[in-house]
Length: 193
Image 1 (cartoon, rainbow, N blue to C red):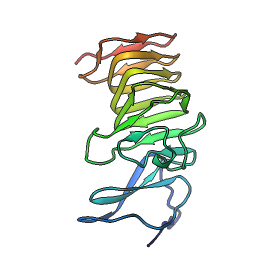
Image 2 (cartoon, rainbow, N blue to C red; image 1 turned 120 degrees about the horizontal axis):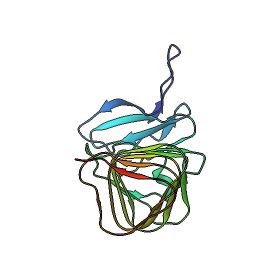
Image 3 (tube, one colour; image 1 turned 90 degrees about the vertical axis):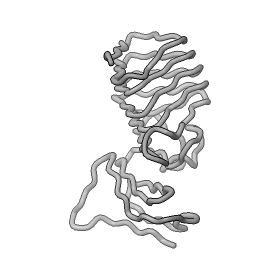
């Protein structure tokens, strides 16, 4: 079938808004044709179909567990670039339970808003603007370069590198640092709890 989305009455969404447009007991496949205004992506879930609005210049994660580098996992049809904001919504079951894995060097984003598990077992990811993670950030061999601020609920580091010029703030219990290197002119603050 065909999905046509239009804005009525001058409606303008804001970045990060989600619109659940269908609920169902089960589904097979997806719409064959999608006509969406700029900045939207679709997220066909197990029991709901959601429209995500990230804004123009936003590349939205549309997969579940998978590789950051895989073009088909992104709303713009390619891995994010240095000029794109990244939105990784809560996909699949509620809560951070899907893993987005960065395993190739040279991955980029202007900013990152993450609600899942962002894992760097190898490869590298650099962002330049203020970013947030209500999910988890796991560094286990890769390099995360935070050249913008990062407010993360949990950050676990067992090996690899966390560096950059941005201030990193860990806000919730459950974070740990058992190995790896923190470097650069940025600061890392772990709130008590």
